[in-house]
Image 1 (cartoon, rainbow, N blue to C red):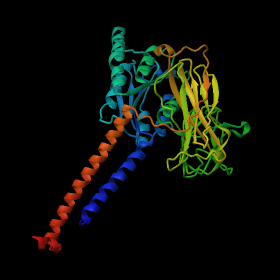
Image 2 (cartoon, rainbow, N blue to C red; image 1 turned 180 degrees about the vertical axis):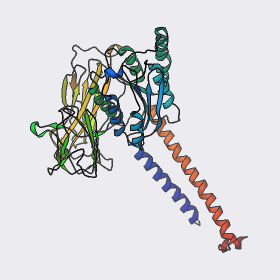
Image 3 (cartoon, rainbow, N blue to C red; image 1 turned 60 degrees about the vertical axis):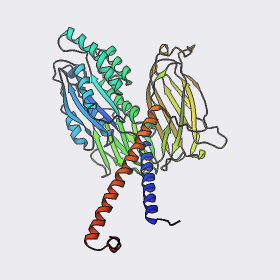
Image 4 (cartoon, rainbow, N blue to C red; image 1 turned 45 degrees about the vertical axis):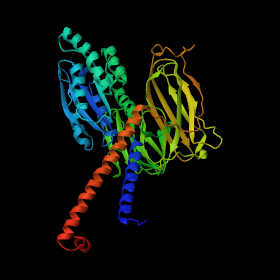
Length: 500
């Protein structure tokens, strides 16, 4: 049997292309997906009272600065009507988006929440990208108010019956933020809860940056560092050699105090005195500092408060978790797994990297009760996967913090999730008390859960690979035909002419 070398090479090239595309696909699936966000910001006249220092603008800027360049944002101001200040676009050039946020005023006459959500849905639903996470962040200090109470009631009913349902069907989550007790809490909670978002109330304007950080953490689940308070030395965190970049959000003790960073070598960084690898954003209540390739060791932050500070990082040693913000009910046990992943996306199984009792989670209930639960790996050979479980027995907003203290590194994940009332899940047994129940359950390996949605996405992705291969083959054949014709004309391909 005679072997056709040309056909063998052609088949090998296709196999190689298929493997390369699948590898790229697999890598893409493991990264945090990009998000689409519509920011709807109240610009009614009452905001002069509830947000006199325009801290909603500063908090919006913080959120924009934290986003990836491939995330997309649209910005809208609303009062009597809703006015787009920046259409949905990638936030690569963040100066454009920061300038758009600066256009928000507090001069409007009324508060038309219906129009704000209607225009936001139109902004997010205008393109064909169903695989993206899409959210609306609505900030307001009031109720539906168009100057006509009968019209207000009609729009409220229409909002609940039509727009909320449209958002739910389109898988668009709405996060609502109220600025005052005069806000329509019931309406804002219905909007957020029915679409899978969260409802927040900013008791003071200064709370806004915490809320935006919570939303960012819920959407992106970023890698973080624990922030430790050490008295006179200020707040500290540890940088290891796997960290390529950090974003530090620091809450100020007062507007007059200057935030300073002390490096492991003792050098002081300030907003006006810093090296070229440091960028610094300042606002009345907080500063955000970005440092590329930070030096290893323990850093200190001076003149900041002990709470509300965050260190987000880009690193090759990641703290991973199986936690997903799916629908949860009071009385139902939630199993948590955590593990470390290296730059090759492999589970790190070296149990010696952790200090004794160095991996645990802290659960904060809606009543601010904090429970500390150790995460344990008891497999015979050491799976590298640490697990525990807890049972939330009251409904409301919970915060889950997973912290790891290693011999040469520290890591943290902070997650916010909503637990629904136990009455919504009649199969669940009622608890005897209202405390957070905890029990440890060890799992020796990570389980891949293939839902209909994930299988559909996987099928769609491999369809794209097949289409790409077909296109490449067509291009290859066309190019080959053109080359042969050119060579024939120039009589440089003797064997072709001989055959003819």
